[in-house]
Amino acid sequence: MSKKKNKPFRPKARRPRGFEDRTSDVLRAEARLIEAAFSVYDLHGFEPLQTPAFEFADALGKFLPDEDRPNVGVFALQDDDEQWMSLRYDLTAPLARYVAENYDALAKPYRRYQAGSVFRNEKPGPGRFREFTQCDADSVGAAGPAADAEMIMLAADVMRAAGLNDGQYAIRVNNRKLLDGILEASGVPNTEAGAEQRLQVLRAIDKLDRLGAEGVEALLGEGREDESGDYTDGAKLGAAGIKAVLGFTTASADNRSDTIQTLEKLVGQSERGRSGVDELVQIDSILNAVGFGNDRVAYDTSIVRGLGYYTGPVFEAELLTEIKDRKGRPVRIGSVGGGGRYDDLVSRFRGQAVPATGFSFGVSRFLTALERMDALEAEVKPPVIICAFDKGLMGEYFKLAGELHAEGIRAEVFVGSGNVTKQMKYADRRNAQVAVLMGSDEMDAGQVTLKDLYEGAKAAAAIESNAEWKSTRPAQETVARANWVTAVKAMLAG
Image (cartoon, rainbow, N blue to C red):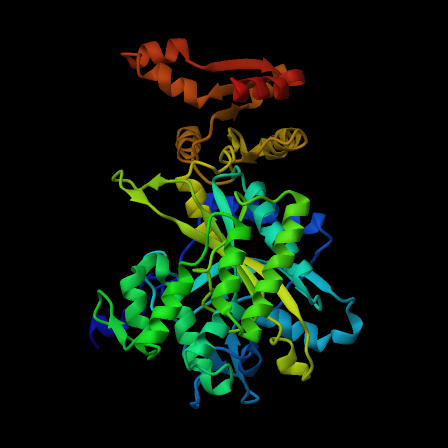
């Protein structure tokens, strides 16, 4: 038997495409951003909820083709009872299922917030992942523009809570009913028969900031081929319909009231269009009463949102600050989140109208934008490293760590193997500022030795010989055990 056959199988360490490993810095930044958003939602009386990652495929109700295995757009598998389950593609569809399942027990409107991973079985690319984190707030059972206005204001307040100043962002608002009226006039029926064509129009407009008017025009017509050679079939609108839709996307003005006047003329006698204008008028009235001016919330007819379940007002949170990439070229971040009204999602389960509205943002995309804008909070400081001179003193070392923990200082005892030299290399690799040294002699004398590794590195650069290093011991001091925590604080502050 050959040696090759006896060799044990070792899988290759690799990640699936479109999935990321997230390190401590990223996770901490995500947690801070989510907590900032949660603080806004909690302040407004919303309650937390966590739904499972898997839902029954028919409950999700999106991306599911008419074929045996519903795995286009979602990650699906068949359970042992032969029912298809799918990883959630967003947090809204699971919420609709939860509300429908617990409808009678919930106070309505039911106001909840949630954050968690969502999954898209789509082609990955730069900035486009198949797993990412979303953060949502929704109000279910609330009809009327007041609930939509509240969601819009929540989105603006989340931008502030994330560290942005007014003028660095804007919430841009539109209404799906306006576009529905224009599409009706263009020959696209507002019925089930025209649903797929309307969705193609929405997705085409949703790409306006990325593809420009020419690219969107192609998608509204026959279709277009992208840079990779992939072809996207178009919405097949006629020339008049394409002109009407593109004209609608440029109908907004700098002032909300001016936009409303333009839209009143544009929708003409369309009943659905006039209903959309009236909702924007009511939202504008509430925003004005609370002091949300055009600088924070604007009306923008190019905003449509690509998901098919929106039924009324829609909005996006857009970053306005000009930023540059690593080569100094200007970069437009654009939308970092959005939402709107979706009155038909819960009714899929109950057969009765259940109004709903919500706001969602992608955590990773928002963080990337904040990082490029230098708007992220300072990173968490690395821990103080307590070196283990003597394994017999491990209890004392953990006692030292506990004294630092009680003062809110990150600290860890070195529990690996290796001498003090290796432990100091470990501290360097952790980018620790302070190392704590205590052997049996120091302990008997009631002392602790502290070493400022940052200052030590600076001093070491100016020392020419090992003998000089040993004689000076730069940035190192021995302090009494009674006040050693105060000395650590001073070293960290200095």
